[in-house]
Amino acid sequence: MTFSPPAPPAFADCTPRQKAARVVSDGLAPANMVVALLLLIGWHSTASWTGLGWGLLAALFCGVVPIGIIASGVRRGALTDQHIRVRRQRVVPMALSLVSVVAGVTLLRFLGAPGEVFTLVVAMLVGLVSSLLVTIGWQISIHMSVAGGAAMILLLVFGPRVLPAALIAAAVAWSRLVLRAHTPAQLLAGTALGGASALTFLLLS
Image (cartoon, rainbow, N blue to C red; front, side, top):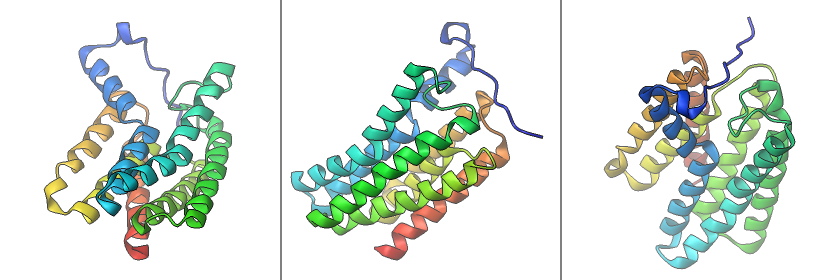
């Protein structure tokens, strides 16, 4: 049976629980988390504004451009919303985002970006390719792929002191369940895929 998530109610018509879930789901959208993670790792890579600049450059290709692609699709009516509720609509924007990330990887390599930033973008590329391949046939949770991977990468880089980052991933999972955007299996699969991306980061570091 094909999974078809329902259209969310207007924010004003949501219950308090649904409103909280909407805020979490929108605020911790994949592209937002990608940008935040790249800025944190960029800063850590050199402990200076230079590293933050590298993070910003990477975020342009991995977060800002994908946000623009999705926003354009929503404006044209080609996509349901910023989270692209319908699976078949996800393939084209994900493929276009993939092109942007590949361009980012190439430019970062050419310019000599810090190892942590370059490796993180490569790991994101691996995660995006994997997500796209799965999405062609099944609706995996991109929210949890990014949230789970980000939490694991933060733990790898900063150690146990950022363990509360796992709570962010848990909040994302809760929000997607409340909004009935995914099944538990889709959330678990997304988390596992995020873990694979984090493993890629670890192996290449």
